[in-house]
Length: 413
Image (tube, rainbow, N blue to C red; front, side, top):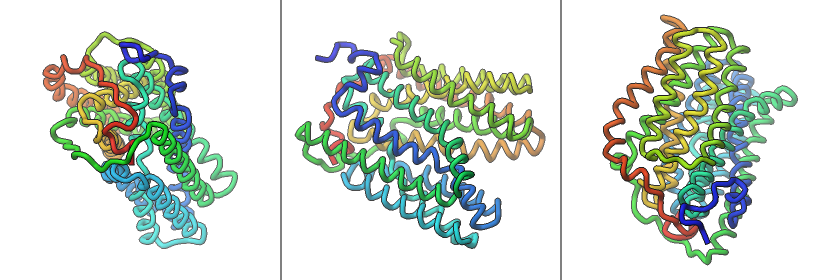
């Protein structure tokens, strides 16, 4: 029987929950496909078009399509059980077509078109897995532990992915690795769909239709603003580091951010916090702003490294707290879509932060790119504070336990 406070705050206990290991492992395999894709995609497009400008444009539009259509894909997966695999098949085929075109040479416009096509259909593995945790766990500290484990694993994948993708592209070819990324994501998504089907069968679930819609403006705008600002500040700082100290030094420094995220997420998941859940994202945003202020004041690689490491801790804890709040603020049937909105906010923040950081680094200089981060996050935290105060009492309550198959069509497609 679950403990009254929501189960054991142990990662071993989380993975021992029925169906958890199989679902988590399949989702992690699919996420590895995502983590590997970025660098091989850019290199394959550069090889196929012969132009970094075309490759950068195509890669940027791919990322924009992934971000903007994330909630729509999550809504589709929530309503139809087969959509997860169908999206994965479409994504794998489009990446394969793009890889084949790049291998033989492709004009700029077709390359951009194929990249956008690939960005239309990646399955929402992360939002789906986080929604599943709310059904697998009884709530409280165990759900916090599960979401922390999930976020730390995702951070680790996206830390290892670029290094592994670049190494594989150097050892073979970028188009071949790009096609392999699609197959890896397809395999992971297929295993996730099969594991979900077995879990639902074990719960004697019957598929249900899409009940109710998710209204973004009524629920999560302040939370989305904090996530967006945190991602934008990180991207601006990364561009500033490249402009100030070169790609080699910046590469080492930026690797500290996901390391901090993994460590912070794992520690956060095991703690029992007395503070209001509604105020934790604001506290972490304030901590993030303080971190980015350090390289703005002391422009030296050690200062930037320390800032990136601690900012990784604060940002991942901010995200985990945001996922916990989704369980409280959003009805069960819409949590997958709400999680996709958080992903969209983060991805858009990263894209806009990189663009603004590049403009600032060019003129007036890297110092301006570093200074943009604390200003932006601090401003968003200041704007969001009144809403957190009004919701302070509600934020301390844990989400109610939700059976795996009860109410959420994302778990009973």
